[in-house]
Each structure stands twice: as structure tokens, then as C-alpha cells.
Image 1: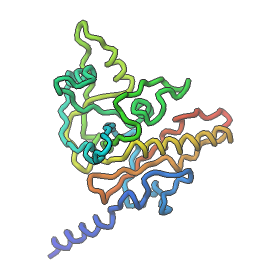
Image 2: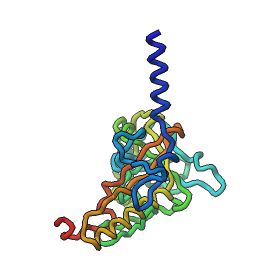
Image 3: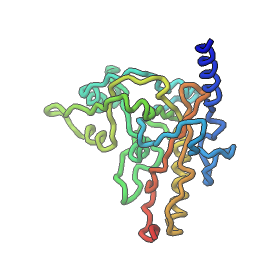
Image 4: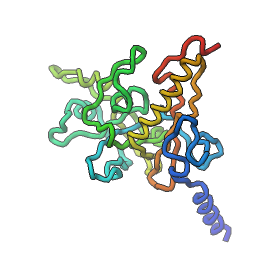
Length: 256
């Protein structure tokens, strides 16, 4: 009987703990609050909060009329080798259908590469050539959460063969493109759209611009998006507050 009560209690807890992204809001306005007035960074919230920079991401575009869910990555086994990573980087058109999935850190350069923001953000940032195959309006972000990242090994590309150009490998290295090796669980996945990523970057930019001219530190209460987990009744908040210097470097006077 005691065992049965444990099962019932666990089921009730799971039902209470779960929350859909629509209850928090998909992205934020300038105030930082979701549409229901919930604080996305609430440590007592019924959702997980993870730092963007602790995640891996893959950008996958979908065709007009295609269900965006169809391009979500759901695999749990990763078996990349250095040779496969190198081959995929050098095989842009996927000739022979031998390419594997490659991954990026959820960071500034990745957003430049994926057209979330401009590839040239100014003199404070390295210029990144955007990936032409990514559609800036119709792309899904498949995100490996920190719980999954800890289970995976990063697989860098093998060096170029003798006589083989290394330019593509150098570009990939600059952005942080990598292969992965290991096993994760379905619960280590979360998903959002490129449009939501663009909106949060715009919100961050607006607050940074205001703070720059007001000579103060940015208050990045709006630096978040929600991402749907494999179970649509579960949501995770992606925290972008580490992007404090994303567009504008604070003036020296801001520290005073």
C-alpha cells in the first residue's frame, strides 16, 4: 500500500510541476514579464531555467507548408568521428548523403552564423559569414539542454588531408561547429523557433541601447525565451542574461 501511495504522489507532483510554454509566454517584451505576469527567472517556478551558453543547438529550416515539428531533432545516440565531422564540413551539398548532424554552442557567433542577428555586428565582434541554407523565417532550434550536454563528448574535425583545402575547416572552427558523441535522453531536448530567438535579441538590443545612452548597466529582465520540451506540457526557460555585451559595449561611466 505504501508503494502505491508513492506512485500516486509522484504522479501528482509531476502533474503539478509541469507547465506549458504558453502559460509563461514564448518570448518577452521590454518589461521582462510574460503575458501572465510570471517571472521567468523565479527560482520557485514550476519550470527549469538554463543558461544559453550551457546548451548545444542545431538550426534546421523547413519548407513552406511543412510541419515545423517534422524537423525537430529527437535522436538520443550520437556517434560522430573526427573524419565524419571533417567530411560533413567539406561536403556542403551532402553528395553521397554521407553528412552527419553538426552542432553549435548557443552563443553570439552561432546567432550570427544562423542569421538570428547580422553577421557583422561592428568593430567589437568578429565578422561571421552566415549559412546561406538557413531560412531566417522558417527554422527550428533543436536545443540540447545542459543535462544532455554533460553526457556528450565534443568531436572536433580531423585535420585536412594533404592537398585538401582547410578554409571550410577554419570557418567552422571560428564559429564552434562540432560533432558530438554519447547518449542522452528524450528529456534533454527542447525546441523553439528562429523568430523567437530574433525577438529576444531585439529586446536585448533595445535595453542595451537605452542603458548605453543612460550611462548605466543594462537590466536584462527581458533576456529569455521559452522552449518546449519533448512533452509539450513541459517548458524550459533559456536564459540569455550572459549576453550583456551582445550588441553594445557599456561605456566606462556605466560602472560609476
